[in-house]
Length: 278
Image (cartoon, rainbow, N blue to C red; front, side, top):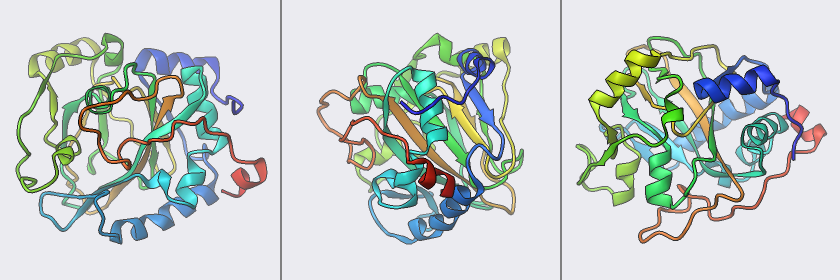
């Protein structure tokens, strides 16, 4: 396992709140610059892994980026990320899913309240929530460009009552069925009453910060985000790490491999000379 870098206070904060925000410098500046530089090329490639906004012309997400050779394949093995996730899960890990999320200026849509784990449970057959989301800020995140909003501690209530929406969301009627799991109209919706009760009990918070921040959060943490009303982009890379003994079971209608990694072998950290360069 990669060496751990989170201290006991950080780990306890993650366990209690369900998230932990690390400041710029957690990843080397060279690594961050390479990631940011690679994003425009990703967005230009027309493929099933690229999901557009409702307007059909603005890229929203590109999935499976860790499966490409180069900076993103190296990123998932960076000792800072790998070591922190292994500390949280007490296990070796692999990346089950990855993406770059773009909230374009004036165009990035909102995301309704949801939990991530219900999708991996229902659609991919992952039976335990032993996963960690890692979001890397590629732009400054502020109150105007659609930051993630969490209900702290909501992950400790497990999977909350959710209803599965039938049919395809507005604007995606002709898309494959699996696209319904990737749009702002959440397939598995938590009731307003549950959200209101938990927000009244625990409050709400939006972790914000400059480019280079790294945000770790639990897959059962209730979260949402508003639309980007600002003239600036809000982009993030998100890596979803899963414990190696929590691999998906067979499901009736499996999602494409760029949404559900078929190779659950444990990741090894990059060599120190590569990690410091990247």
